[in-house]
Image 1 (tube, rainbow, N blue to C red):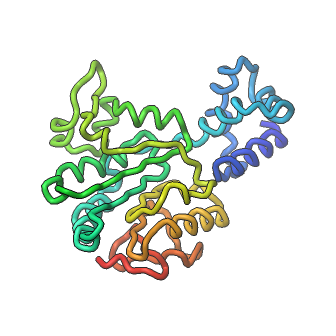
Image 2 (image 1 turned 90 degrees about the vertical axis):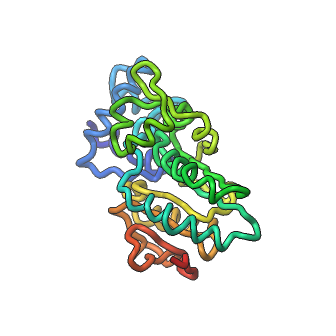
Length: 275
């Protein structure tokens, strides 16, 4: 790949999605963007870059961004955050939110929907305790393609075998040809909408619990700080933030601090989750 083309695409992706690509990752551009070039009847990456450089075709730019930000996920990924969510955070909020009887949860960068659906199944299993409560799960992603997949609730055999307990598969999924269809009672618990973490999330409202896992690793330090600072402004002082196992707030921002003894869980710098 030509140096000028790599610089064009890496600058574009940083601006549009926060994704930072080092030169040793240029192979990812070649692997993921060749299908985009073919889709637009272009001969290769050089011609694709010329369309971006000269025409600034928004459809092409959107397809490039989507192709580079589609990430893998699975049900109940890493297990521990979901255990903390079920065993500690929700019971804690049931005590603290007695007056409003409302809990709001945000899954940022939800990809194919496995994370929010994992949370929804946990809440469904707790429905007796949640009777009379309004629990909202909002799931967002920059990729419209991934959001469409998530909304469908349709997964391959390979996808349901990764992390999903067999008891929940039997209880909440039905086989549909060679795929598995998630029950509408679970799908209806999630509100999916497109959102770019480079934007101000104020319009989304306030959230008691935020899952923003395995996305900050793709950002540079300044972008990580911006995203975390924005999330902190959307949470009450006893709000909880989950990050991925390879992510941290330490050395990035003072808006959050780790919750002692709860790996991957963070609270506002001026707050206290209380667990």
